[in-house]
Image 1 (cartoon, helix red, strand yellow):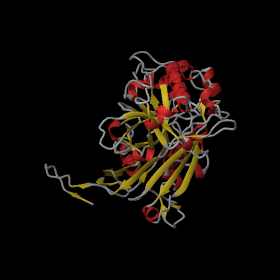
Image 2 (cartoon, one colour; image 1 turned 180 degrees about the vertical axis):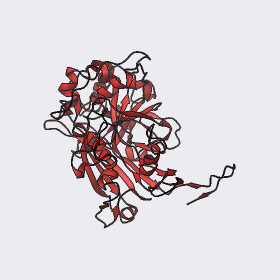
Image 3 (cartoon, helix red, strand yellow; image 1 turned 90 degrees about the horizontal axis):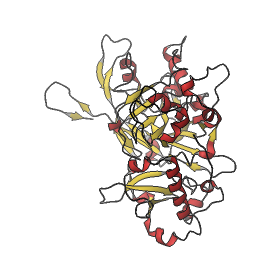
Image 4 (spheres, one colour; image 1 turned 135 degrees about the vertical axis):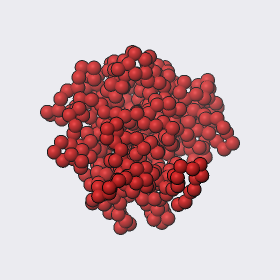
Length: 438
């Protein structure tokens, strides 16, 4: 992998889009994340780049020839860097293109954002060792981590059909649940609905079936990152997950932020990939000098919980957790790509990897309520006096993230927001009639 800094990362660089220069914007000119948007009455998605509080339509600007995000994501790294430089040149202060491009900016607040790209396949990993250890401790106090965890990047295949963009509400899921003292399970709405603080990793150029991707080439196949909330029904999960892993407990909804922060934008925030003393080194196919030198990415993340009462009173919510990708992850993004393809699996442009819950080592760094409330045994108390062991109807969860480093501009990811609605309660009697209540 090649980590290179260029003129687009210059912290002194300013844009002729004034809102990008505030110092508070998540989208200064050093960021330039990609997303898909449309305006009222438009049926086609357009490729946009966020700059300040505006969106630049790349096709109208003449910077791309089409509105196919997945086609753009197939570009080779050198071509992506060239496009980034063109966009940066067009938006910087003093650009001769300002007069022409001003009319091609649209306020972010006036557009509909979609999923960042068309996602064909979605794999969720389990890279957060602190999350894996704490969850394992709740179920297996003497052996919280299974023997393979330190050797295999654990993952399972999820449902791309229920991915949704930030700002979308979803119904509380139903499924089979079984309480410890019950003789048999029952079909019921989940009473232990949880959030998961994750990052989404988007695949750019594909590989051919039967051709594994080497560690040295893995990041060439990653287009960028976004925030990701893989909502989880813990009571459904605990009953169904043995022997084949999560199923209905995960497939009802997963929320993505609308902007993909590119690997080029993240270049200043790379760190050495270092494991704690005593941890084993990865097998050779999961190791490279570049990965050891700068495989980790320093992303600060936080979880905000806004209850229905808070929303009614105009309160934005409480920060209930803060974590960091580099500190939480036992495996890097490159290692996930290499492992996913080592058996010959073909990745396609637009495929999504979830990182798994990114909990830090401290209690206030847990990326799920399962950890924060010790499985619901010790609910957290919010500033309103409300208590939460798990999510209630009307709760909104907002994930936020940013990268910051001395000598470079701070960049953000935008919000990843979702709201829990009451369950759609269906009478499953075997007939073709369906009744709804609740």
